[in-house]
Image (cartoon, rainbow, N blue to C red):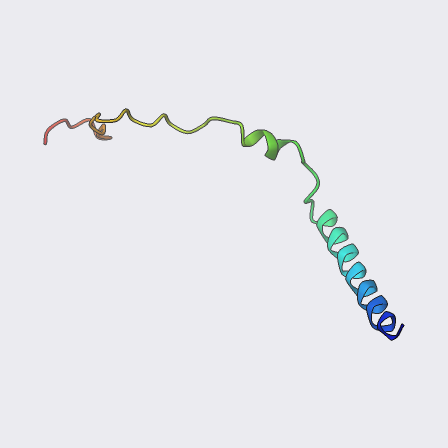
Length: 65
């Protein structure tokens, strides 16, 4: 029974920290746009990888070397 005297205040402190962190996140705008980050993962904006064995293309247009 004496352990409850310790555990209940600890749990209330942890609950208070969790509520404070949630309110802080809401005020900072962390939950303003929940859809765009999920869709950004699906966007294919990277350049295609060169084929195996193909020579890398030079960026300056000089084909000597």
